[in-house]
Image (cartoon, rainbow, N blue to C red; front, side, top):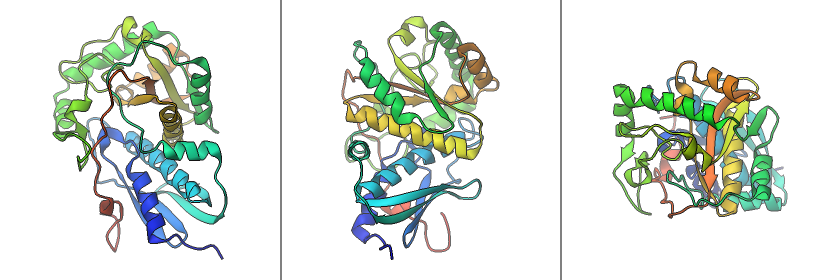
Amino acid sequence: MTAALTSEQLGVLARAVSRAPSVHNSQPWQLLVRGTEVDLLERRDVELRRHDPAGRDRVLSCGAALTNLELAVRALGRDCHVDLRDSGDVVATVTIGRPRATSARAYAQYQAIGRRRSHRHRFFHNRVPAAVHRALVAAGETTGVHVVPPAHLDKLAELLGFATRVLREDRGYQRELETWIAHTHGQAAVGDGIAEDALGSEALPVAGLVRTATPVPDDAVLAAENLLVFCTDTDMRADRLAAGAALQRVWLTAASKALVGSVITQPLHLTGFRARLVSELALPGVPQAIFRFGYPAVPAAPSPRLPLGELFPPAGGTR
């Protein structure tokens, strides 16, 4: 019979999940432990009605948390099986199996969970070596998920410029973004939201988020960036979960190689934007996220985190 995890081991899982990246650092997940099964719950009470009206980014965030959960189970020396759910609050169930040694690659990714940072500033201008670039792409490859560097940067700059102009003038979007900017700093920051000092004032994709003063990007901005686009064959919840999980594996691989990164999704929510992106960049599927990465020119600060106790729903259901 497979033994359940101890309270200390469950703490390892909770800490790993709590460190996953999420839209506006909203941390829209909880864990429900049932013996040797752990349900990952989507917190649908976390809503970004202007940024993420369909909840796509919330599900991507849960996919990233799922990667951290699976890596933590394997780092404890246990096998596990992941079942994705098509509907309901439970997005995935991780069944913990018998003792099994984890792979060196998975353990390196687990070790990088605490070092991963969202970096919304410029990188050093030196390019990422081709071998490292290939390792990142390989880390994200899975059935139904395609990780591709974008071609036609002039077209991408044009599309991001359009998105910048629209989002700068969207007062509802700007008000919502402002409510998620946390005025907290340093290692001891607690809560959710985006730390003010984590935001840049430069053009996309450097800034990552469009504010009222964000300048329109041009070819020169994109030429200095290392970018990957995550695409899926279709756009169901399972696709978004898989894309989020793949993105996190890439991000953790990057962190294990002293790289930092950030994610761009807000332009993808504009009407017709994703279709244009597919057409102009000849993408192999539905774009779910754009990932930028490189070597940091300045240290990236950690984001605030909710207390671990809030990861677990109260008796009787999710909060």
